[in-house]
Length: 193
Image (tube, rainbow, N blue to C red; front, side, top):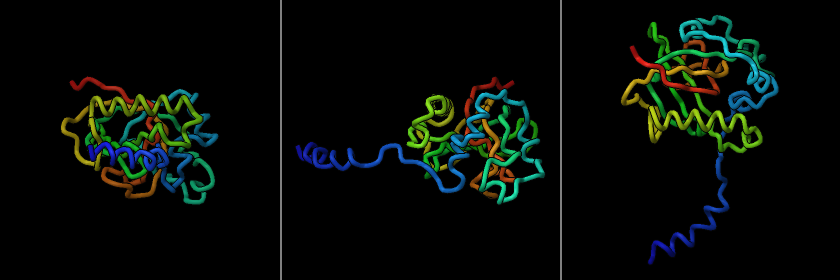
């Protein structure tokens, strides 16, 4: 009986609390791909590349270029094949994956934004892509992502997304040059030979 009274008393608080709050402060519109140049990239063909090639990119955009617009190096939609070695959920509600090269030790971060984020609400294509990518993670990698940690079973995947340069040293598994795939638009399993 008491638990029902408590639920009844808390329901108005829950109903008034923001649902789907998300977001960070650092270049957020670029990270969720709602900037004009990012939206234009959605209709382009992804170019195949590797984690090794992305992490060796020596022309990290300068800070001024990155704050005012999408940097030239970030105007790329790419596809890579990699191993998911870590997974979790960040405070900004993004799913955070650490991807490892299939041919070396290089790693980078790839993230899937929250499809319930209010800023994404007006972009049904992105809501659909982020929802499907997160469903894949929940079904195949980590069914309840919490803190970022090594996965129980390494999964080989093909990831398609947009190149983004984040702050250097942005969490475990970051690339030395700060390159990421953010956002992930598609993630599929690849058979491990």
